[in-house]
Length: 106
Image (cartoon, rainbow, N blue to C red; front, side, top):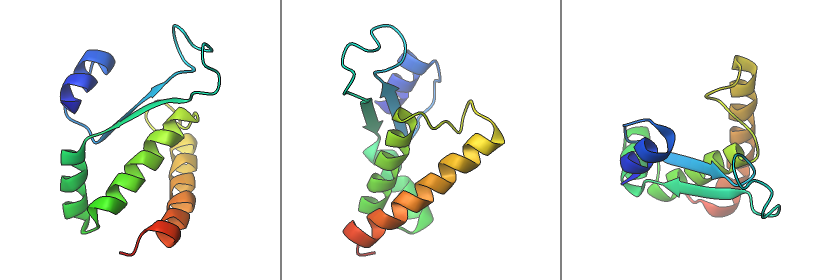
């Protein structure tokens, strides 16, 4: 299913683990100024990634939700510069360490 979403909306005919759709970009932006957008997570890909990284499925879901939310907040590791990527990765690690402490018992 996520491959179809990725293909139909982003023009990338391949599976992925997370996709973010910002409500503050493109046509209709600003209609709901308090709504950042949607995050779609592939549970199948998350399970595979968790297995490969030897982490918990729950932890992987938290991480992917965080990753998607950062995209909605304007962080971009795909179209940005190397510095943008490093900034996003640093923020991910900073926030995920807090999530891990508070919610995960890995």
